[in-house]
Length: 211
Image 1 (tube, rainbow, N blue to C red):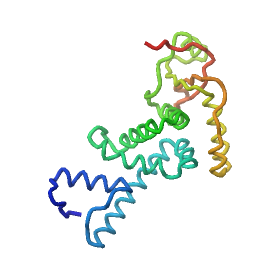
Image 2: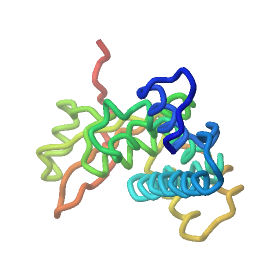
Image 3: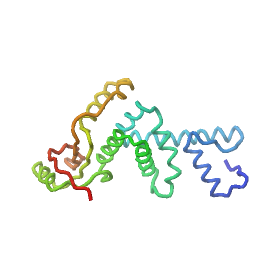
Image 4: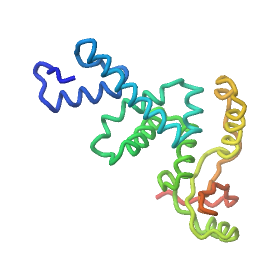
């Protein structure tokens, strides 16, 4: 994999190699059959690593997207990894940023809500906000002093319950694709209890005012 591309400097060759290793639609570098086979094995290993990280970190999002778009999430996230090599400190951070970017570019509110929910459950503050005064009062009645809140425009917890029901029963992909959001806008609070992050709906209709 050390073949030189005419007219390309070391940086350009490195960028092309990195893109080919993560983007299954990119042309592989020119090489004899033995080196081409080794390259394909390494590319497949990296794609599988990304699939594993996605499934481990955001299992509901992956399950939902696989039923709707097949392997597009995995391949789409992988293709974005080279763009993030300078801004992400680790490959897992790169996968997280790439997944968020891929979902945002599609403008899909369901996958976006699932991803934000799973991210918040991992302890991240991304996509969440501090609770309002009214929500703090409601949380205090539950013995909670610190929390983050995720706003969604449907009943996210009911949607997740239905998704988990289908997943537990190995439902056909068509059943998952037919799943529709229902209910009123919801604020979901995330807080620590018993060493784990709990997600619970808030009853308060209070919402922060946009600047």
